[in-house]
Amino acid sequence: MAATLTPDQRAVLNALTAEQCGVVSRSQLLAAGLPGEFGSNRVAARRWRAVLDGVYLTHTGTIGFRERCWAALLHCGPGSALARGTAAHLHGIERSPSTTIAVVVPHGRRIVAPPWIAVVRQRRPIAWGGQPARTTAEVTALDLCDLTDDVDRVVGLVTATARLQRGTAHLRRELARRRGVRHRGVLRDLLAEHGLESVLENRFLRDVVGAHGLPRPVLQRADTVEGRSIRSDAVVEEYGVRVELDGRIHETRTDEDVWRDDWVAVDSGHLTLRLRWRHVLGRPCRSAALVARALRRGGWTGNIGPCGPDCRAVDAAPSR
Image (cartoon, rainbow, N blue to C red):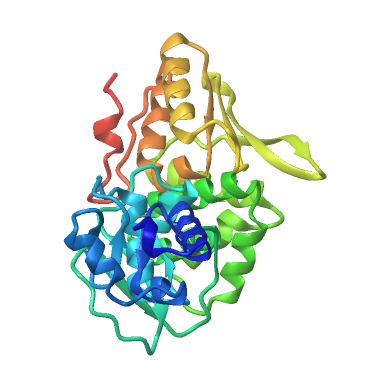
């Protein structure tokens, strides 16, 4: 190999392999001035591996997630970008990498791809960034929201993205730019620039308290940040229960941390709970069961009621 490469060719190849996790394409080799059969000859010599037609791994080791990402991008051609669950993992929105590599391409492009590459054709311009190229975090999050029926997942995607971007401005702009979006009402509530506390209050009173027949609390404002009230206290004085409704969606502590602390607080006798968007919008029945448990510790003798045929609040709340 060394004898067939000029210094310039070697520099180009080294730069490509360093940037692209050791993956290169035939078109890139040709652009570097190498013959078309250079890659296939390296494969025949068992020094490289063929990942896809015209896409090579410049060693014979393992093909991992990032290598597959680069191979999929090079296979799909210029102007493509990693998308959906693949992009979400690269951004840090989702922890686990997807088994299928999702790539978005311009709508008119025809790609023959193996089963492990999911090609998504898109008419609107592809907003991307990073290396390997992936759809922006806000585009990725709303794309995934469009693909799910699960409100809890929607809240999780938005909160993870807001934590990543330290705010909701990018998500709000992307939502405003789109015409057809699933869960638009939930997304509007989550991304409201003003009045977050009142939206969260209304959802709590309707979906957690009212829908499950719990005693209605008195609302008291608390905590103002930059002129905005971001938390409300819902107090049931008779039973000594206070529920903090925390409207922030890009805190460092996770929603699961809050769940854990709430259940410990109830069992230890400290009847102040904290609920966030994910608890109220995504899991109202579980939240109702938690509140009912706290109320019972304070002496409430009522019964929690189901909000519908599939309600799990009654199962989750222990009997007196």
